Image (cartoon, rainbow, N blue to C red; front, side, top):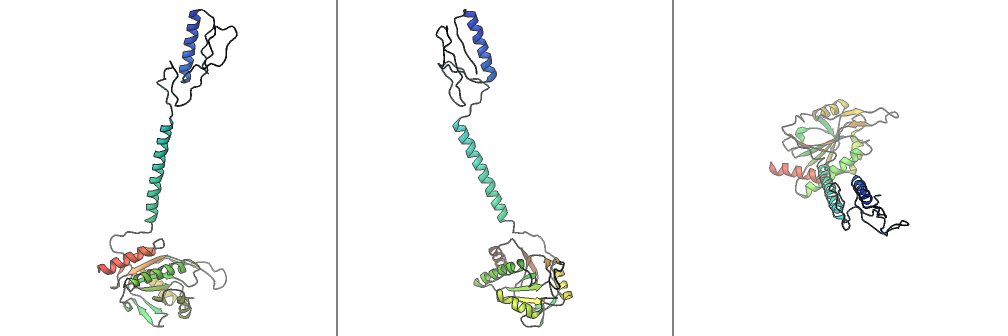
Length: 272
């Protein structure tokens, strides 16, 4: 606190005390306002001054503002709050736009994917090749014992095929097993009943399946068996879009939405 005392003393003593009070006031960078608070016994009637100055309040009568003081006003706090809110809102907007575009993959040039292959169709039981399909196809590699990822991707593919069909665009879905040892024709035929009827299921010997997977650079790795014959297969989670000419056109990652797939296929079909 900075006290300004005026007692019944000679004038020069009062002036010295006043200077000392001013020096203390400057060192604390506070503003002094004289407020009646108490009286010293025997004083000449002058009151003790008590600092009551708060942030952002106006100086009292006769009080000079310190050039080093930086008062904080409610207006300044409100402006700071608005600027902070604007910055946070902008960050959230940019973050959401970035997250929404994560599933969209842009490629340049022509990928060296696809080629000649031969597998067995569960629809007819006959051998089929890449030349057996004259319409655009979307290929997915998986296995019937997959607990969650494969059913989820096949449901997404089913929705995409239905949406394209409603636009008059017929696309064939191809499910290629990566587990030829267990996914027989009969097993895949039962498995197919849970998804879109325009998805055809292909199988073959382990070597035939492996050759097909290599053409599309699909990662396949058999996990350790928990029990005899009970195991999982790690594999790439990608939908491959092949045009009616048999050439690879694009691929769709797990994060891509049905609307994105439909839009891309529609652009390719109508643009060709």
